[in-house]
Image 1 (tube, rainbow, N blue to C red):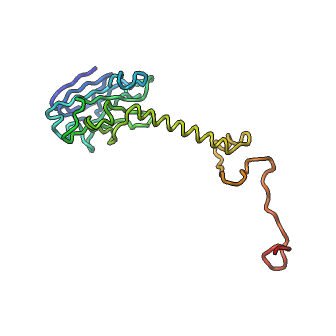
Image 2 (cartoon, one colour):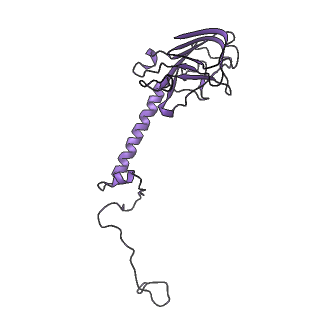
Image 3 (cartoon, helix red, strand yellow):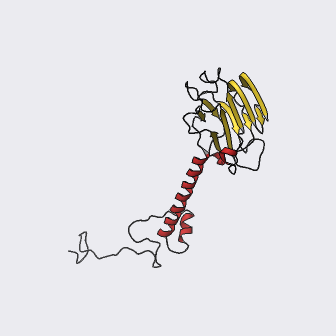
Length: 224
């Protein structure tokens, strides 16, 4: 664990890397390419209440909670990397980060925290913040987006899984001929409409009917 405290901290060089990072600051900034890297990942088995945040930042009343852009801005965010598999060559555990911002329920005065780090969704990465979605907490923007809670992320994943399962079941109901569904999933384009599917039965394609014309007329003999 690395603990750093001060009225104004500016991190440069190769940044700061440890299993767990704890900062108590009035102002905090990082140089490009100098992230605050915490290797500890979010453990979904423990849940949000029992998990230890890999990164914890405590804002001092002065100037932290009284000064705009005390912890980054939209164009100059604080560089972080929390719980990422790319940090430290980790090969086990979730590719997810969990951080905590203190003091709790200190929103007001227009103060917000801006962080930037690994893209959420890239290589399955997730980023969670303690207190996300609570209007009484100091707003924290990660890559200029408010982080989701673990519960919300899990709910969205469950909805996506159910939707995909339903889509596959509907596809299999539409294409009933044996072995055809596998071929269609492999890349053949299928069109399903109100008419009889061309993949049903074994008679093959039916050629259009032909007829004999009468003289130079565009019509069939015997046509009304």
